[in-house]
Image 1 (cartoon, rainbow, N blue to C red):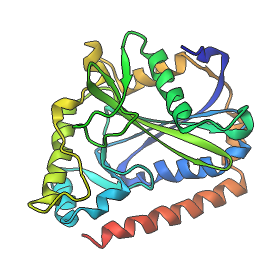
Image 2: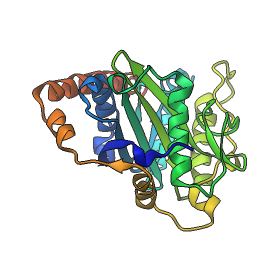
Image 3: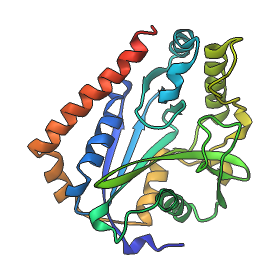
Image 4: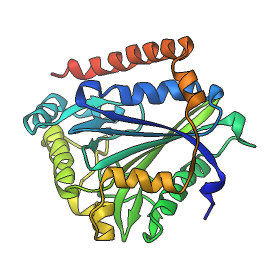
Length: 274
């Protein structure tokens, strides 16, 4: 297992409300575009209440407007991200974490699998008593080849985006809360969105029991803040001076504005369905 204590990271912690939900990916996209200006790898922690984050593939649901209305009826907000293919839940028991690796700080451009494995290694180091496995958990929501699981039950999913200046590896981690209810919410979302139509886009058949939380796997009470602190404890967090300088620079603020416009245009596809 790599010794993360030998690695320096900066961090950016972003607690969000549904009113600011687009900020999560606006900042993710802007930071990736600005990776050449990062002085160190970056950990971006963010949280978001009572929101279903849709993937690009979800817009192909034949009865999407009805499915979206069902989310609203159950008290959930929603928006569409520009990465990953399928829906995930974010609430006060879910931690979202992105790691940014600028290419200029690496001795080579990480392969897709190498980048994924770094995230897995970090979570394993933060929770050493868990035997974390990788591989698709077929009946989870947003299944993927780098799902992370414990005893066959998914606790998180990983995706990544990359460009010519770096890569960001993005994780959602089910820390605590009622994962069964999250699973039922997404199962019902797809059932409502498909109805009796043919599932030609291969939307997942979600079994709520296919997923669990770290808290339940450890049989202990654990909050998202506890999880953040565990991750922080296995790395070396340095002062944010250079990150602050970047994020307050005119170029970065301009990049944020462009990413906001891009994300707002993406949401227009959903508004047409309402």
